[in-house]
Length: 315
Image (tube, rainbow, N blue to C red):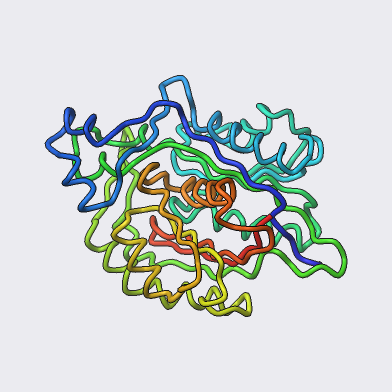
């Protein structure tokens, strides 16, 4: 009942880099067109022999190593993904098998781009309730596998990758390192972001998503800060879902986090859906842009249209 904290984080991206110039040879687009509209320069693309659970396992292994824990220490595995092709075994079970985690509760969480922050909140609630002590929380998506590579409006956006966090119970007397989540959705607008059909394909109504994100979400993100007892000015970092630079920058500006480092990993990684927040967060920590104990707002939004945000303390 003492709350939980993030003790380590890690990320993984495939080796193949797909540039804007590469895309210009595939569809009617250009480097200037892509940069001006979404701010993306490059993205990473997984090969046909790299399933989403492999991406997830690589990131999870790095987070485990950073935490100084072994697979046997983990009793809960949560994987946020919307690109698992198979219905069973789920991605979490496959990650547990790859890492040799014995007997964990293993669940997938499909909330698309807000998946990681939903999964992190679920891990926090589970630890607070005493049903788990150490959890692996992973965001992983292989968007390239659900993309129509002839559609220039969507294929320029996507990338593949994974990020993972190790969440543990706080020692007695220590303040929680994960603040209460603020989450919700707009189900009547769920059609604005879709991965559907046979085979499944990603599509979206870009203008609707842009208007919703830039007009409705700043106030919701401020309420997430209030749940942590903080103001936006108190934040050391802001990691929004890395959807599009034209969404990230106005949302961050309207939030008013004037002292915070703003994650802009979308420029080099593209939109990696559920992987985008832990991936960008891990990179900021790796680069030394954030310090241990710094308060950072993690805020996911996208498909359904769902959102979830919470302030966490850096490991």
